[in-house]
Image (tube, rainbow, N blue to C red):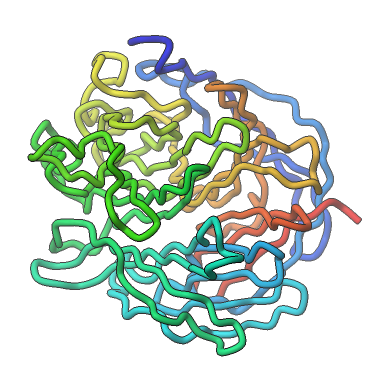
Length: 409
């Protein structure tokens, strides 16, 4: 494969996080699963020394019901939190106070569906637009939708909420909706949509079919219309909204603070989890080229990425046999509280139950540490506060905290 498009992945494992309880200090570290060195070779285990960075971990919010997405208001005066069963909260991370906003759309809260991600318009200060992704029911089953409304804080509501794009088709499944939303530096809105758990692993899989929106990352204008510059707008047989395809269940989108590139995290089948850099029109392989094995077996799903020149390999991944790292929300650190972390990537882990910390140098991604590994909790999302520079992490549970990670006092 062209080395200009796809870099090899370096194998590293990280070190342990010393045990700490909520509200006390801890030192970074952990024992993350091994990363892959290439698309076809199992990872080599390596002990990687970790510079000691002391942090204080506290519960900024408590009593949240299955939080899925986090988005700070630009002045850090409030944190928007989605609850999967359909509530949108505006919370004060200093006092812990929470207001449930009205005007939120009805959602299809079944299986992996419900009220999912939240993000703000780049010109939020001027227009107050809040964007939500969520699952909806309709003729043929359910699907992923994105909509927007104006935050009227004093009234405690989203006003004039409207759907702006609905992924097609509706499917009789309650899994793999995606679904993250992110604006890039040019004002385009990216929305990830899962493959809805189709099991016909081969070239006819929905994630390899450009005529639908499944198993892809969509790129939209801020009003939900399709940009003229999208890669498949001139293909009459393709969905013009598709920006990338061959994505299994992408649950993380993050904007690189220096390059402006959109990075994506997605779940594999049995292991095969990935971190990707999105390229317009790129095919990321699922399921014809992948590092997963089928559930309950050692049978590979597809061929390794480097055996096909028409797909883009991950910049980092966990091949079958490594134990995987099902990755959900992700963010690049761009705050001031931890200067040594600037430009690093943080990814929330669900089944592995820790926050993974990666250094990034171009396309070279190295896992260096874990956070919250001692708590035995699934993590769903992570964000950086725009003023304090603290990290905030959502726990995937019915009665959950939102953790604050700050420098040790």
